[in-house]
Length: 334
Image (cartoon, rainbow, N blue to C red):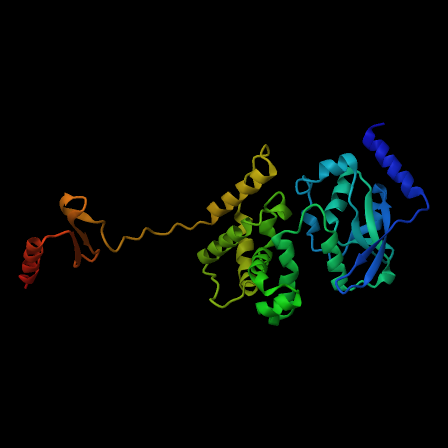
């Protein structure tokens, strides 16, 4: 038996004892909630554990590739950090550990949890706060942070006002720029995000580029954003056009690449597919043409307007005699 198998066996024996391990969580308002430690065997994960409705993680995106940062470790040593769950109708609903749950299901591991009883009467704010302070492994992406905000805006148009949105979700005014980025990421169609092998691990820098891709597709189909139009409203109008475009998109991925390289490759392909060639614009003025050059500091040059009726002459370091001759020449024009 290997070291890790011995370790798992010892852990199971500990859980089989009558000892109950608890942990106290302090809420934002100073109140306290107590949770007990439970280890759910791998064979019972599907029947006893589910994802809490307040957990913003997009569960369908948790493929083996999306879990590549934790799956090898969990498959070998098990889940080393407890998740947080609430007991509802006899099931453990995980608030923060959906990635660990998915990796445990794939990797054959048990899942340790800090579990709150239904009698704890957790409010929405309590649940979100517990998930926030207990979150381990990978932090939420910009998109995951933004999805609840977009939903709230759709439910209440008053929240299109950023001061109102910041107040409701308890962001500081200085965080407005960050919140705007969350929303920009969250309004993108899920079908576009799903083109990436690790759709929940998309680099935060990609979202602005993907938004530009969407806007380029919109311009090509005469769907543009009004000057004062909110991103949520605009993307509601734009999404049908984007979905039709996505159906025609064909991206190729080299299986030998790392996940990060695959992500970058797909972004590059999408950017190229959405580029609309703009007709070349003839410059208004020609390039400067030297008509006299004594040195690099003493010269005269001319540029011509594309209408053929205007010229500009630039002279540098003329002496008094040269300037007088030039003025005399210009004055002689009728």
